[in-house]
Image (cartoon, rainbow, N blue to C red; front, side):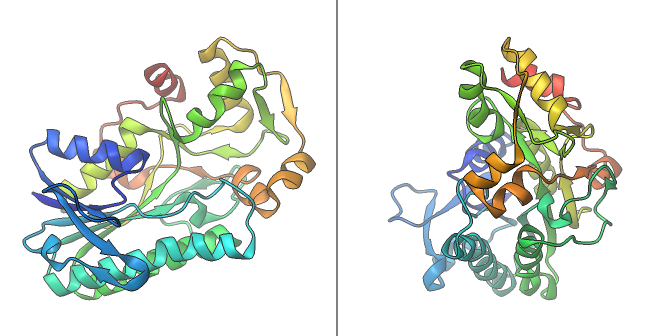
Length: 294
């Protein structure tokens, strides 16, 4: 297949490019700088510009664009960036998919779509929640409508917290645990819908290759855990005790609204669609995922 990827330089995108090429697919990357390699094509979502040659003969487009969610406080300007860095690229790509008759679009989304669901099981049929993240995900997914209207197969990858050796959730936490500063967040009862990097990439490749899958798909492991258990297991894997607690007021002082929605809220999200279509998880438990990356 010929696959065009936007957001190929990030944690998931870099690994996905390698995985698709290992599967003997041709991969073209959309870059915002001047193209410097034969597999690169330029685009500028802010200006609505895209090298149309990139989509000629493409079998699928994968869109992984978006600024980091919990990197800093959500000022008004930061919220605008979180939305625009997702919605504008998606609209541009969805319209290009429709214009060129590309058969499939695999578009990024997140489990934040469901809001804070407590300990209730969440599947792809669960309605959207409330809050900024839920609204952001609704806009993100709705931006694919030009491709849907044109008859393309559109899969919405509602991705959870990625467990990787470097980068992602574990990459941010490892230095703290190494300094014996590992701690649960607040009460630690919020669910963490984790997924290993191998499975996040494997599931995206599965969505690209499997023409039977469309609509929302939870990219999460089949055994979500609460924050207290995640903290305990990560500490054990690193050989570092983690007896501490970061109080909620400290998180709110540091991150404001982002603390409530991205750190203290959670989703007990299950990968029902992946299970239905027979995706084989490489790391079905958190223990297996942590052992693999650490």
